[in-house]
Image (cartoon, rainbow over all chains, first blue to last red; front, side):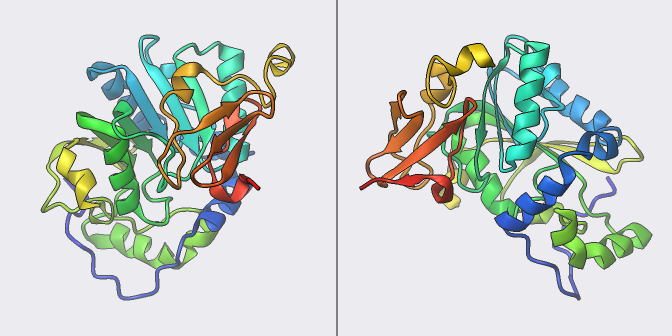
Length: 228
Length: 66
């Protein structure tokens, strides 16, 4: 495992990401997102959906569904709801659902991942692909996903997590002040998402290319939602 | 799409989605106003619009009830 699980010592400013900044960034990204990002993230996305398909339970929430790149991969028995903060991305996702006749997609919603409009325990599985490093506060995202998934359900994350050390961590750290322009935190660490001392990670799997992304699976626990 | 928009203002929303949606502010129940294409949270005094079948569950985009 090459990603860091401790709390990184950040010695320089980290730009604050707010909802408006995220929305602006993805409005800029919407047109070219699939071309620029679709390829490099394809393996991580495929692996995450394979995991979702393998897991029991049909009620699936995809947080940060974006243009819906993953939607065609879900099994027909699954009942998928997708949320995103970007209107432009959601419209592309809706178009994909219509054009490809994706009957497994129950609906799409414009929503803030840190303040979701779902009742507690509405889902069996929640998956966030390349979303955790995008939201202003990933721990709030984690708590919200934990709330809307039933106890005993599964939380899945695919993300780029900061490297343990070396050149990559140095490069990631140097880019940190650019977060608002990029729309994500280049120096995002696993401990920004969850407290490794409190949350038991069930599985952690590096994804291609070159282990740049990691698939993390956590069993949802009732107490986690209370802690938030 | 053109066939769907005539059915309900704001477009069709799957009943299975409506069933789990709550107000993001109060986490309380919502009333589906088909004619206006809105999801109404009486407790928050907000009506969330549905645009092209996509509920917009953001308080800052919601209409304030009188």
